[in-house]
Amino acid sequence: MTVVKRMRVKLALNFVFFVLLLYAAGGLSAIGIFKYGLHRAMDSLLIDLLAEIRPSVQVTEKGVPSLKSWANVALIERMPVLATIQLFNKDGTLLERYGPAGVPVVHNGRIQSQDKSVTVMSLSAPVTRHGTNFGILEVQASTAQDDRTLYELIFAVVIAIPIIGGLVAAAGYIFAGMALRPVERTMDLLRHFVADAGHELKTPLSVIEASVETLQEIHAQHNISSLETEMIRKASDRMKGLTADLIFLAKVEDPMAAFDKVSINLNHLVEEVADEYLPLAATRSVGLTLVEEESDIYIMAEPESFRQLLSNLLSNAIKYTDPGGKVNVLLKRDQLSPMIVVSDTGIGITDASLPNIFDRFYRTEKSRSRDGGGAGLGLAIVKAVADAHHATVTVESEIGKGSTFIVFVSATG
Image (tube, rainbow, N blue to C red; front, side, top):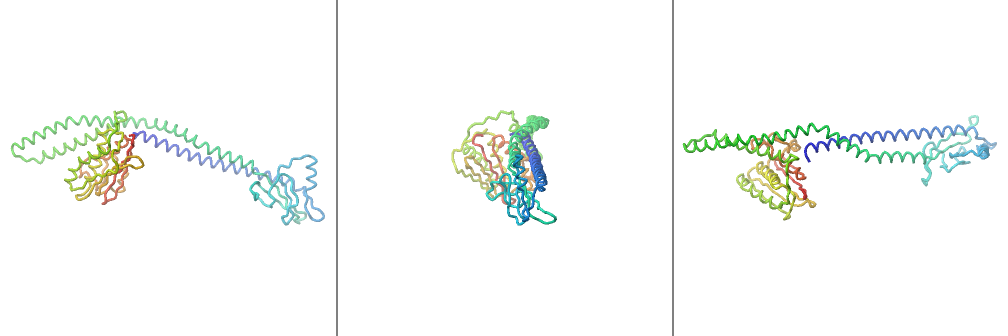
């Protein structure tokens, strides 16, 4: 995946996250407001019902409240009793009940029966005559309809999340592509400029290299030692390596470039690269070992670019390991995925530098300075090749104890 595509996906995901966050906040607010409205409507209904029935309560000569006269009138006029009407004495004992089954308890607010089969909103008021309390009148209304409506609203809000998320993701990806189009064009121009500049530098570098060789031959014939000529040669070699790295990096990152992958034996490739670096490790008094936990591991890869990835990892490990240190290469499988581990006992990388270690031309302040050679493109090439092969590369490091680079390779490339 190219840098622009990664940015496009990241922007789209961020867009989805913030839209869904706003949607969730709006949905929760709407549910809260709707629930509050239902409660207010229920309270108003109970208050009106209580105010309507309360004057109909009669107190018998024995001081017992009764609604029988009201019930007889309601029966004669066939008035539907949709709410539960309960009449208690002043001690809270149920005396009369009309309408659907409720919860026979004096209570204000939401209440549920012991068997949880009935949930009601309840409102009660004392039955008084001339300042004397004779009982309690209570009205209750079932919350089943309101609860069902609220659950349907919550379900609708929740079920809409993946739909909205999918639509927003598609729209975000499209708009991110439109917004990043100028950036993509700029990066294409920059990539082509780097490749063209690299190719253009080849000619003058070849001229410099040939001229230096001629000068060195002349100096050798006359037994002249020239430090300046040697410095020019070293600078020319460094520029030549930098030019090759720039051209290679531009090619790997170019989505339109041909990048033919074939099935390769990863064991053989790792062995070949390790053998190539044995002399360099020996000259620096660094031990280089290779451990293969499994043989004949095959992957789909472009051989030369993957060889470059391995070479850069080994080169860095040896370069930044002090004499007497060790570099270990481990090849194994991790849950069927091939894994290459390159670890060293070198100088390590600071925590502040780890997030940027794969950036182009990035060098840490002290531990990996330009005194060690190179131009800071080695790990950028490792990352680019890994991305081109759908592989991932991670690094763990501790100052003074060394670094470990892990490449998880896709078996299919």
